[in-house]
Image (cartoon, rainbow, N blue to C red; front, side, top):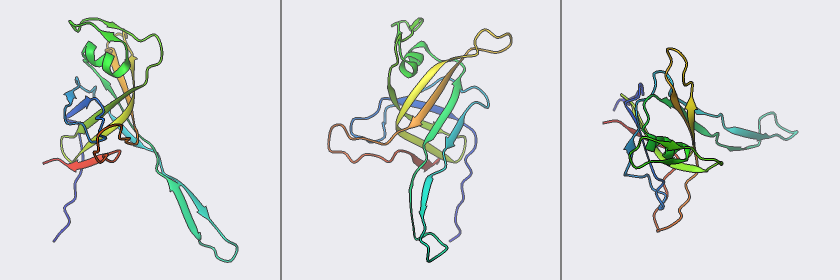
Amino acid sequence: MEEVRVISMGLAKVEYGDVAATGAMQSTLTQLGYTYKDSFEMQTDEPSVEEFYVEEVDAPLDMSGELGKTIFEWDILNPKVSEMAALGGGTATASDNKLETADAWTSIEKAFKFTPKKGFIVSVPRASVIAYPKNGFKKGQPMLWHVKATVLQIEVTSGSGTPAKPMILQKLT
């Protein structure tokens, strides 16, 4: 049977939610506002590999390594105030019309699901999030909400569930 190859392109939507205590991928997610054109990037650092050599042979006798970290970065054109608070810290009013920003560093973790227009959906059960306003008040350029999500290892904090892997790719059907 011939192998089916998949090309992933475009971004249909970004969803986020709380990190599940069981370590599984969160099933209850909320779609974020629109992603500003050409701002979405996924970058994975090259793995760090150490090779162990001996005098008697030219090729490495053994190798050891660590995977590189994966970071997703993008800008949201039209975030809700509640989304800005959820991703960047601070407090949103019940009417969702006012954000009181955090006055100290806050560690924020969320689950994300990135759905392309075609290809592989990427699910991240746990990511560290940094989000903040960007550009703002430039003539002809809108204020954006910049989001940076760094994929983290899964830790089971309650229940007896089997934790998901740090990233899950699933073909869009």
